[in-house]
Image 1 (cartoon, rainbow, N blue to C red):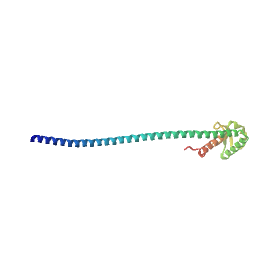
Image 2 (cartoon, rainbow, N blue to C red; image 1 turned 30 degrees about the vertical axis):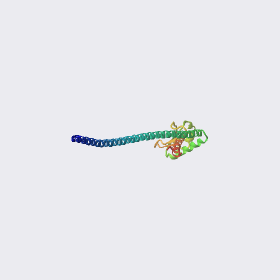
Image 3 (cartoon, rainbow, N blue to C red; image 1 turned 180 degrees about the horizontal axis):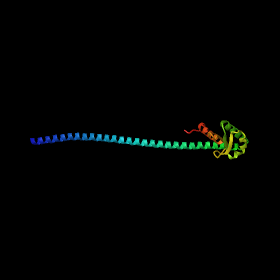
Image 4 (cartoon, one colour; image 1 turned 180 degrees about the vertical axis):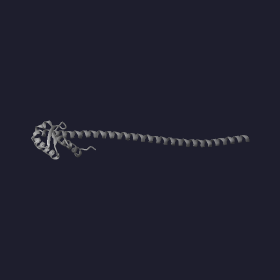
Length: 197
């Protein structure tokens, strides 16, 4: 083997060794880049998955809140309807008893007492408004005081009692059973303990 052959072999070995060394560096670098790319993709995928999960959880919570709210509204509505039904029953029964009372002997005394109350509260003349069925008491009511100048039929109430009015001052005193019952309804609503929360 000649010197030139040896030089070529040496060069060939050197080139192969350098190539292997550079190949290893390149492969290591490629491996490092692949690992970095894999980690980056993994982190990006995790970030996307976390974001999607968060959005889905928020959507689920929002839907659940809406369903709970709708359920609460529906429940409250049913409770209000039930309460109104009870209140209506109670006050319908009360109205029926008041109507029954207007046919009793005590109703005459009640009407005379209310007329006296109105006469004492109105300084001057007054007009008494009664239901048509109570016109049978007209003469008795007129004889109570010279302050009563007229007794008229009213369509503004339906159960019984009377309304007194001073025609000069427009002072009105409502002593109807309708007005008393309505006041009781307001009091009952506020004090019955049937509040919906």
